Image 1 (tube, rainbow, N blue to C red):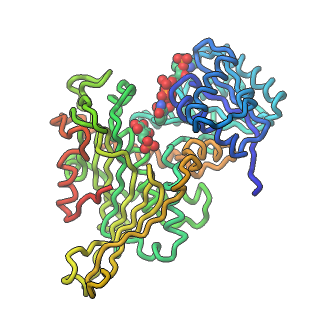
Image 2 (cartoon, helix red, strand yellow):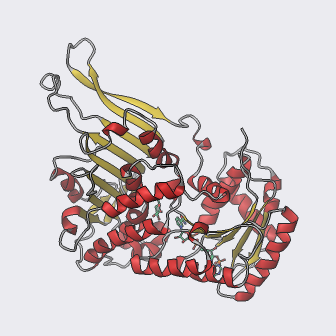
Length: 491
Ligand SMILES: NC(=O)C1=CN([C@@H]2O[C@H](COP(=O)(O)OP(=O)(O)OC[C@H]3O[C@@H](n4cnc5c(N)ncnc54)[C@H](OP(=O)(O)O)[C@@H]3O)[C@@H](O)[C@H]2O)C=CC1
Ligand SMILES: O=C1O[C@H](COP(=O)(O)O)[C@@H](O)[C@H](O)[C@H]1O
């Protein structure tokens, strides 16, 4: 198969940081190993630390080898494409030096003056870097220039708008790639395929046949080393504003007229516009917040959130959110979309459950107590695949039905070959495909939706902690569905 191998220099701002080391370097290596990088590539890492190229290459090597199976041979030539420049993002001289380095690497590696600037640093620097890149002439090349921006994109709608305006002074919307790493996950990308490539699902994908949709992303880890960031953010901003709403939009959107970034985005935007507005008065009816206390996680005693590093002892920050979202359009009127996400929960899993409505009169209903609604479960992580829950005849027991599951797991035997989200997204960016990145319109609508909730929560102190570490969240999360006659399907 012919694979496109785009040529470019990737400049990573924040190359000594956690994200670069844990995610980006291993993903670049996987692109290289899978033959998706042209031989003509270079990666330039910048950060304040005074490293040499050799120091940096050895860091990258450590990051790559620790992400690979123990005996894997790694081609040393890969590391020779990595360069480092000590850099302070607020110092203009740093940009001039970087400019000359990029010119010389363009010549050495024949990268066609194509550049990706990847901002893997604290968000308060995003605007400054974008402006300086433009003003100091680093985007002025004969190739293309793209800007990749990590989350969080703002803290609320006004700050996101301000950041966007700042970035747009330097880059056009089609040069900006806002990362939502969930959009790089194989099974999130598969939502569209499951929906639009199967004649058996799309006709049922509406309020006539679907009772509710549940999206869960639960984590077992606590806030770890990220307390300083997380305590100002909370689960609503950290997970709901981006990943959860993006998955919801993909599940609920109309079939796009073409599979182009613009058409898909336009359908997602319509879903976000149709979300029933929250008001200060109705937030408690639709949303539940939680914060973990101490408990047992993965068999070990763990502290509560308020005892974690860099967290205030009376913090009001939520580490769990459950919500019922209504999409007020023709297709989805009356169908609740339940979402829940949290830290220090019982299991690490991201899963979507589509619950179909019961048949109006089930002939088998009185005979088998075990009759279940049909469910379509999309396993995003750690399992990747789809399970269809059906009812079938119980062998030898006449017409009594029993639940059966049809499973499809992708890459089941060989998880190492499942592409990493960052690998997929980096490659898309090199190809200039922005389908799996978030457009400003989506970011803006998502912030507007969650801002009302966070404002209401800020004005009213919660009774925290309200769930034990190692549980599936506060009891109010179950009550949210009980009220509607549903329950969370176990994941
Ligand atoms: N880590 C993760 O798992 C995730 C991170 N993100 C996002 O990615 C971004 C980076 O996060 P993360 O890697 O965790 O952050 P880190 O704090 O680990 O890294 C920050 C990087 O910025 C550099 N830096 C700080 N100040 C300056 C400066 N003035 N000039 C130049 N470089 C500077 C640091 O290096 P030095 O000290 O050498 O200057 C370091 O390389 C953030 O936006 C975060 O929200 C998003 C999702 C997950
Ligand atoms: O963006 C984020 O996502 C992770 C969870 O990602 P996953 O791929 O492991 O499901 C979360 O831990 C983090 O707080 C958040 O910033």
